[in-house]
Amino acid sequence: MNPYFKDLQSYPFEKLKELKAGITPNPDLEPIMLSVGEPKHPAPEFVKETLCEAIDGLANYPSTKGLLELRETIANWAIKRFNLPNSLLDAESNVLPVAGTREALFAFTQTIVDTSDTNKPLVVCPNPCYQIYEGAALLAGAETHYLNCNAEDDFIPYLDAVPDIVWQRCQLLQLCAPGNPTGAILSLAYYKRVLELADQYDFVVSNDECYSEIYRDEQNPPLGLLDACQQLGRDKFERCIVFHSLSKRSNLPGLRSGFVAGDSELIKYFFRYRTYHGCALSLPVQRASIAAWNDENHVLENRVLYREKFDAVSHILEGVLNFNVPSAGFYLWPQTPINDVTFARDLYAQENLTLLPGSFISRKTAQGNPGESRIRLALVPSLNDCVEAAERIKRFTQRLK
Image (tube, rainbow, N blue to C red):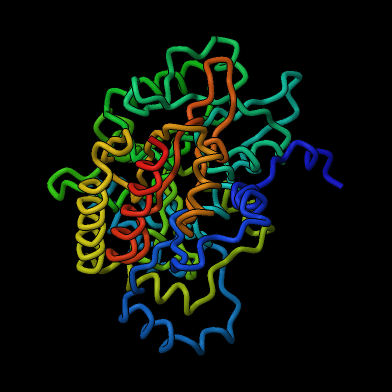
């Protein structure tokens, strides 16, 4: 067996299952789930139709690199979305379709980490974070170093506290912007500092941008790593890679479709890894993906629905819990008046409402644990269910006081 299995922690939802074990929730209330970031808005009808129309493609093996039409569609979408010159993102060398960001984030880490060095490699990632970053690093034979995301820093991973020895061992800096669960957006100045560090210490910068298309201000979409590179004169995206998905953008988590883009050298090596990894997208999935990336109307409608839920829930919980309404993403990240695990357990028992304790997706560091006494609320159910959930949280919290 892989000796690094012993280093893996239980997945957050396994911990949540254990927390709820043996508890009979209030039977007078219908269950509501705000724990899992799985979009519940309807999948676009035209995507489903395209998938069905292309179903005969199941008779063919798909190529690892995917259809040229899909890569061109992705490149065109990214060029338009991130204000890139037409010649900057090449469908042949800068883009690769993947089976969702989860699969790709894990596999890319295996491609990048080099254990031949006498110093054990480091993957640096935000805290709290998507646990795939940690698991991928550990199973590749690396250690992890966490950058706390605290309210006093606007939930931005704090770079200045990182000692020089950490950057010297760093092989991969894994970012997530907009952040999960904070919704924090990174500035051009922040990206500039990150790239200066990457050049100085010779590491790769990976940005998980799967929440980039869910934002509140229609006139100010979140800055991404690719457009930051372009603005900073880094036209070949050296050391940089981004991950995107149709799961959140298009309410298609079950399609398992996304892409990676960036540095052509990184893409070349990742492509070679994937020819062995065996995660090519089926032809019907590729055709459905082309349809999804070519349409923005359903994405605009999606953002409207999330804004309505944020506005309604924020109005109910204002003055009840301490929280910031994020600029992007679909999570709220409030503080709790008691221990986050106790809050989640008792809320489930009394109000039949499931959410995720912050400490389940964060780690203790020398600077503290930024997830303690916080909870993650995924505003993915219907507006009515989100409103009902907020009312239950308000009622439960007022009883605590």
